[in-house]
Image (tube, rainbow, N blue to C red):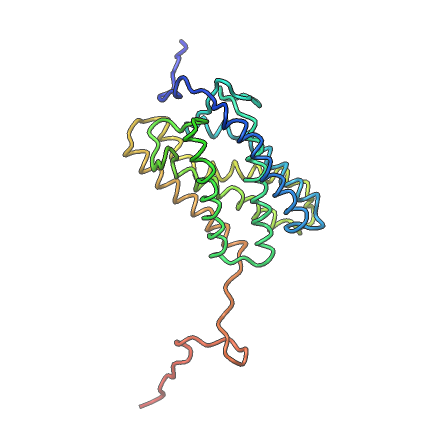
Length: 277
């Protein structure tokens, strides 16, 4: 016997791609791609064009993971009038997704690698993490308002239609990719072209490590109480992932030094222990 099981939450019906915002997002996304390419080749990775291009191509390839994440995380792009790039998981994907992934995932991986090579502290890495989240929020809220796509189902922590738990995952992706390249980039057997695979695989890893609790809840219940609880777990896992990455790639803060350039001793070590009576 064959059982036909319908999804617990169906995508919103009747969504039409915005005639103004679709070309703006499609062609407007080319601008940050050009800026990132120039910065990558001239400032961030000068003399390493193969690595720079490989990271950006890897970011573009990560866009093919979008339908899977959207299927699990309940995201739906307006299908009618869409300039469709490809379709999988019964989800059509617009062309501007490709441009976005090139600069957001690939470009930010290069930027993170640039800072890691210059000696990034754990605090600095988490500052980058917060900046990547903010960039994602600023990018997504106008698109949601324009009806380009929507998050449906019992989405927790929604702000202006955007469930913030997603941003913790998205911002971790380029950090993971950069960390892998940073740690093994000088090892024997490494070739810069491998970044083509490292960047999209890191995107999958970041999503899977942190996203699975909320994905499971979204696709099995209508209870906001449950999805809020699992989203807290997802946020915690995403932050934990970045923390674990920071333990392997960041530099410890320099010890305080005296006027003579000698590290200051702690109060505990400076304390004089009396001897005898």
